Image (cartoon, rainbow, N blue to C red; front, side, top):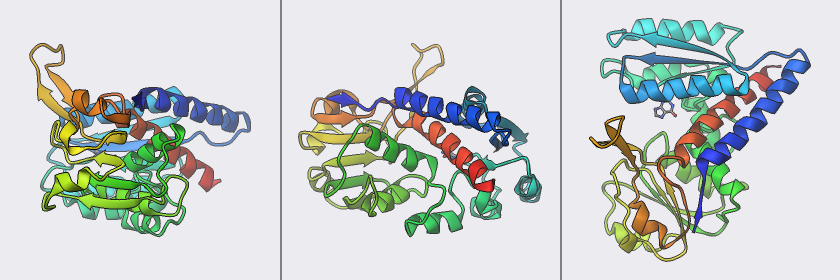
Length: 291
Ligand code: GUN
């Protein structure tokens, strides 16, 4: 079994980005600048956004964090977006999800300038991705493609089973892996909560992408030998023995599944760190595209 080490791979990617930033700076070009808007004080979201800001510092990007209170209304958020849309100093920005319930998420995502949409969530960019045209691929699927590529996991002609149909992971992942691209050309089955005979399907998989948000859902009796398993799940379970008060659990029962796998991502340290590296990569792309 080979561990798909997202922590190490993301560190490699950040090092590559840092070198490019140094090169840009030496040529007198603009430094990439990422902004992030976060509404409210959800603990997990704040942790993620802080990690994104810290990663910017590490690679030499500029970053701007805009924190808005939980009761921010839609209009005020749209105003912040309108400012960032035209700010020449900002190459790309994200609005951290989920948003408070009183805000229409789709309306917010639609308001982001697609050229600065480094999350790749705007319908224009989702459409381009679906047509296999150059665009920002959203960070989690992009990170999974990168991990598979760097570990030389063959996808062409393989049966990939994607568990989950979310807009952020399951849906784009299914589209991307079925496309004619370097990491792609797979036969993809996308499963979700209404799928019947799920185990029959997962038992046929060469590669499984688990993105349903149910801790330790994928068990050893659901897979064949020599599979590749990508665990996108990251649930915080209360654990009084931990200093933080919680432990992170993926969608895969790692101990039993890893015994039958050729390649598998750990949680934490698998897909999670890759998403931040790919967000930086998209921001670098946005900055380079501008010039
Ligand atoms: N919430 C969970 N994942 C993401 C992400 O990739 N981008 C944003 N903006 N919010 C998220």
